[in-house]
Amino acid sequence: MTEAPPGGFVDRHIGPRERDVHEMLATMGLTSLDELIDKAVPRKIRTDRPLALPPACSEAEVMADLHDLAQRNQVFRSFQGTGYAETFTPPVIQRNILENPGWYTAYTPYQPEIAQGRLEALLVFQTMVSDLTGLPLANASLLDEGTAAAEAMTLCRRAQPRNSEASMFFVAEDCHPQTIEVVRSRAHALGIQVQVGDPLTVAPGSEMFGALLQYPGTDGRIHD
Image (tube, rainbow, N blue to C red):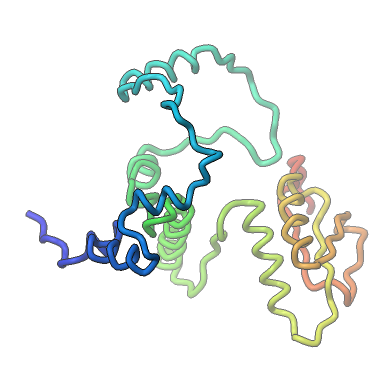
């Protein structure tokens, strides 16, 4: 048996109550939602005929169609690299993380996404590593790859004293190309200069507030 949710919980999180709807309509001088839509949607974009959509399909029919489409794929050996590699996902991880809807259901009524579940999974992982090692800190990324790199850049920027004139972020040229592009995109909006180069030859200067290095590099090389 499960305990019934507190009164008003469903209405509060799913949508307004009937009384709330009438109060909002009355504030606008309207009597119904149909009248609201009629006034809000321009007539020139309305259609006077039903949409040309095919009949609805069952889940089984959709899965069968997707399976037929997938059979047309030709699978070849991939040499793409740059951080994309085949990996083995243990069944226990697939079952308890990837297939657990608790990690990716909507955390707000208007914004269903998996990102928050991924962050929570990283927090659980980080906590477990800290417990196993007995250390007060454990490494964990923010989101993935390029996003984590961009967030690290902004963290370095915020850690600078307010009177600091450093406005350049150094990125090693052997980082993944997609990571470099995400960092550049974030930096452009914040007025940060990004210098891409060889960390073995570029000397850090007072104009730099941080640096991003990748190990191993995007080409697989390991620098001693």
